[in-house]
Image 1 (tube, helix red, strand yellow):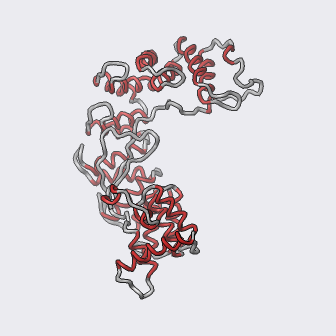
Image 2 (tube, rainbow, N blue to C red):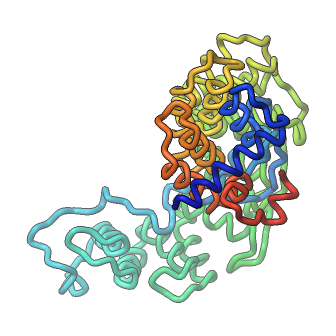
Image 3 (cartoon, rainbow, N blue to C red):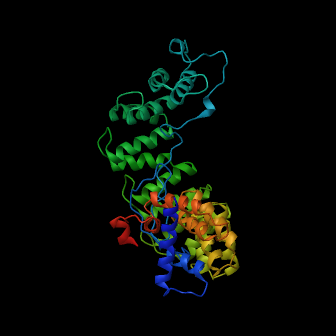
Length: 414
């Protein structure tokens, strides 16, 4: 442990002394951190999105150091495979663990569907069992209950409780779609878009998608398909149209994407004022990333006159709403004292919040802060702990600090 502590301290100090000609004036802490952390993330950013890129697990697109990024948002249906719906879980103390439930004489399709959902997710009284869920949903679906038909389509599409079968998924989604069940129509549209269990048919896919776009979430879903080419041909004008329709329903993701599209100017005519307009609308109803971009706009004069006071307000708002980039930027700002009055304790606070969210850069910075006692009592053990966390994510400076090899790809991107 002692050897590693000495190693990390040696690497950090040697880098600082080498860069500044072994300055002996006593400003070692600031310069050591500055040479190790050469990113302020305070500049306006720009990124090209990848058409059709999906982030169904909630991840955001990977971004570069100098790019405004956008969330690449896939369709998020009201019914997500594997999603737990506790609203259907009834607490019945007389209902024993699933013994005998297979033989229950339930005739009502809604009750059959609800029991299927309980088996699908499991609850206090029922052991999770996808096969039993499929059995009860089949009974319900055969009586024409559309939610059960849609869920059966999901099960056959992904092989939950049954053998995977796209054609059977299409069969049940068609049943529910014929009765106007929106989730099934969207799922069936995806099948036509990608040729899953049915011959690929872009016209039919678009028709189904547009029929479902009657509420905010479905309008947003259709906008993203046109924006990212998700199964249908990209169309900037239609993406703008449906994003605006979704934004009218207070879909903040649509506001963010509108801002991005007008800023990017690849699918439509670039218009910084409109980009600022939509980001501000999103920021003013509490979206962290919109607030971040509004701050950048006020700082750099993108679509609006520069305004230091408003820039600081929206950056604080973004950080307070858990935008990790804003947290990191505030950490740097308070440390360097360049755009905020120098305050090591606040620098540590914001960097710690970002580090706790798993951001490698912030984890490394926090390790440096602990190592030199910046805004916190120096603690070599905690310094090494945080640097290790960043190293696990292949953060180059952390790997170097621990005397480990930096992957070739990381070296190229430094």
